[in-house]
Image (cartoon, rainbow, N blue to C red):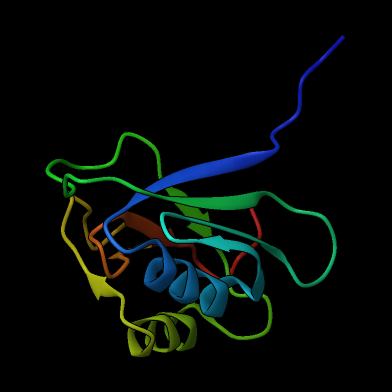
Length: 120
């Protein structure tokens, strides 16, 4: 018997706003929305569901777990620009100019990476 990933829970100050941001980034749709909880899943195909859960405290340290995303229909530079236009910001977590990824933070400060164009 094995297990599979069902969903990723993301703590949020404003679950609705953060869910809208990630739905735009990943082409997800909101499936369930309550005052302190929002669940989103992909518009196409099967992928991990994202659950945004309201918590009283804000983010205070670097993530121990983060999302790595890759543009599916553009290059890395264009995807970084698109995601920044949605509200992401660049952050420095110790990466160097030799790294092939760009580190960003979502509107609540959760770090994630946009990977290079090459398939690894």
